[in-house]
Image (cartoon, rainbow, N blue to C red; front, side, top):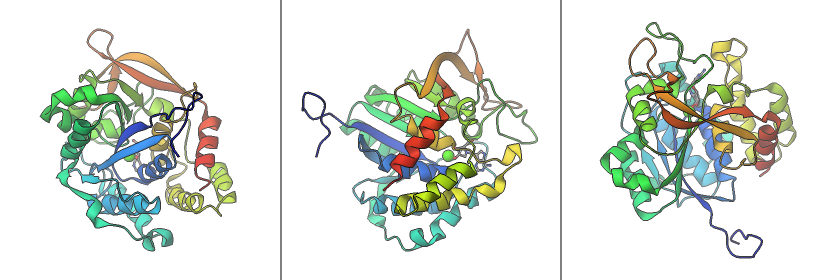
Length: 321
Ligand code: AGV
Ligand code: CA
């Protein structure tokens, strides 16, 4: 049944293109997105950043099948940013594909589009309007898409991006870096800068917002209590694979992407945004840093305050399926 508003006329669903980079929390984000009744998912595209493309594609296909969404095309990104993710991080989500529920899950390879990620994004934008783009990895695919067809920018309602760190330290620890950048922004700093300069309406969910949501055992305990719901059980297992990185700060796994995904549903002040003039550095020692630049910066809506309990309760509710 279509959603209804109070006048009983059908309410249009929010159209979304989801670009992710295959990490454990990217996969959890796809699951969360697929639980949202008010979302019309047009396509999923993969950035080969914090993952290997084949693993991330397989996980994506299996999760879509689990939710009976064999209609959603999957676009494989072939573009690579300047600063590769550590290989052991890229390999980490492989484990998701061999958890029993994922091993047993059938999938349909025919969902893989012949188009590249950026071409698939542009195809969707050509056919639709008022589209939200959710990105939980680097922004390379979207930037390539609008560089090819700038006229399609007008079809984008907003861009929700997990990326950046404004008033808090970053999470990049490299020999030629001063630790001021977040990884998604650092992977392809030039694309990050182009995204900010694009004129698109950008909602940035950076480390300022995500730092309050480390993966937490109490929360996993609550999720485990509802493990009779298959999706709660699987989500619990996915998060369990991230837990051996606790407790050192650099290696703590946060609910980065899941928070960004929640923005599509929690729009009553649970996640507070502030407009800030921001820019992106493109060379060392601070490549990818998203810094305040009152003179030449671009207006970006940055998430700062998060009602953590509201987010966690929302996730618990959605995963009861
Ligand atoms: O910087 C956060 C982004 C998110 O999109 N990613 C992981 C999330 O999917 C990179 C990242 C930062 N620290 C990490 C990361 C870690 N300890 N393990 C894996 N990836
Ligand atoms: Ca990610």
